[in-house]
Amino acid sequence: MAEDNGKREKCCPPGQVLRDGKCVLPEVTFTTLVLSLNTSALLHLGELEDPEIGGKSRDLALAKHTIDTLRLLEEKTAGNLTTQEKELLTNMLYDLRMRYVQLTR
Image (cartoon, rainbow, N blue to C red; front, side, top):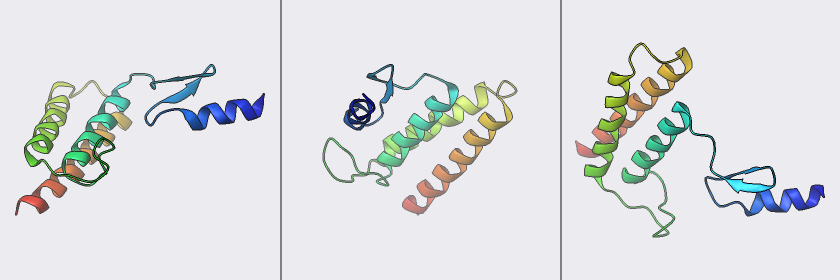
């Protein structure tokens, strides 16, 4: 039975996790939302391979839009986040902004 669970876990599509023997999306939390937007921004910055095209591509307009979305979340959630959530969002925004600036110089 343990081997079966191991095989199922390896068969889950990217972004899904094994829960109760089924491949499911992870629980929706503020952290998973921010991580998802970060991944999207990195994809648009050309930092990650796009699984749909099998390579990297760059769309700076979409990258900026995603960074702006994270900035809006930061603004609208000010004072309502845990210390860890605030640090995660602050650090991701800084990193994404620096990457964007390097590409647009």
